[in-house]
Length: 523
Image (cartoon, rainbow, N blue to C red; front, side, top):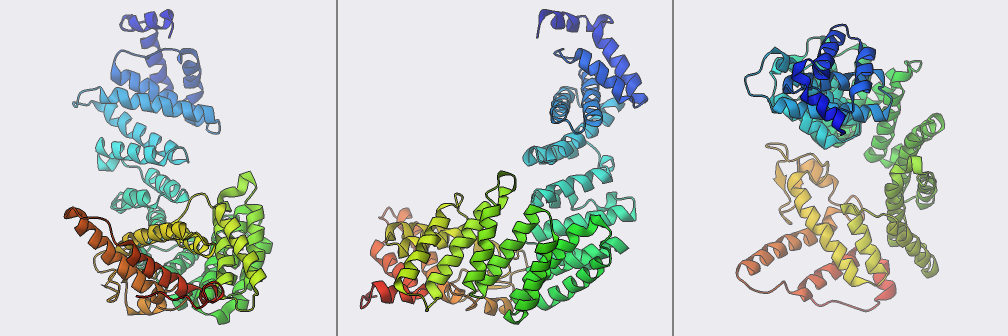
């Protein structure tokens, strides 16, 4: 800053601008006059500091941050300025000795809570959680405001930071003063448990939840999602039907439109997972929601569910039609969040048709394989399931080296994932939650025998197909570690090539018969 501002700061102990600023701020804060505080802030914001006393300086910065937040809450520049004031106030408070007086006891939690909330509105989730932890480390438990906990956890859920929501909410119920606050905490906690695969914890919380008339409608949707996550499809359908019926009576309430939409989508999706006989009802629900909704992101979610639903029923044309609409709508910059999922789903649909549709001639299959490859190229970030898709596409296009590479990446991730979640329902592995593993491969873990049977042979690449491959890869990784510890060389490449080739043969017999007629692999 200029010489004038530095000179003003040096005179702060002699009744200069620093003391004037502090006194004006104290008076305005007592009167909750944020407009006046903002006038002072505008006049003196050029100063390096507002008082030599760290506590007074922190108080001024806190007041300036609060004024910028309250008076210009929709102005992004003012919100960023508020964060800067709070961060500097936090630094100044950390300069003060541990013997805190009353002002510090008030300012510290206020700074921490405001910083966490401001960051959690999409600015920086990591800094939001860091600010929350700093706040807890520097305050008493009774200083945690109920509305702060509820708002912060809601924001984390909106940005799918479910682990942070759980950290914020677990153990916070004692701090809730009203029945409504308890309900909101339970609701946010259930959403977070569902979001990170803690379905059993979500179910326990759901069964003991406090109920209100409005929350009862939301509860039907959440209970349905929990049972769907646990693959209890009959129970999920019953909860969702009840939830949809109740929400349809409340259509005049716009605040419940999102809940009704989500409940309908879960109902239709669960109907399809339960039985192919529910096809007509499920797609009628999807189409009704598609005709009703105006939000482009909601429309994309429905198209995605319709596309994957038709694919699972081997209805390729309907699947491609829905997913093509999704790909086209996702190209718009404002609504492009589902573009990778859209192209990945299209690639998967074409691939499934290529491998299973016996009515196709050679030219048709070649064209479909090209479509699948073109869409897979547009998926820039590769989730684990996409590695399996790309492994197949590279193999069928004749690039075995890349096919083996992606299959290895898929298997490595699968070994890690199976240690953490049930193979079928993706329930997190916790003490008592996942009871046993597949005896054959020693990799896949399950909540129970019912879940083991559900994924044994339910699709083209089911566990019956993957089981020997996962078992081999588990042992191969162990053997590699032993060889490395003994100073020996890498694994025998010819061995895993034979295993990989056998796998690729098993998932697309038509490819083998068309291109490798008469070719056999010696075990």
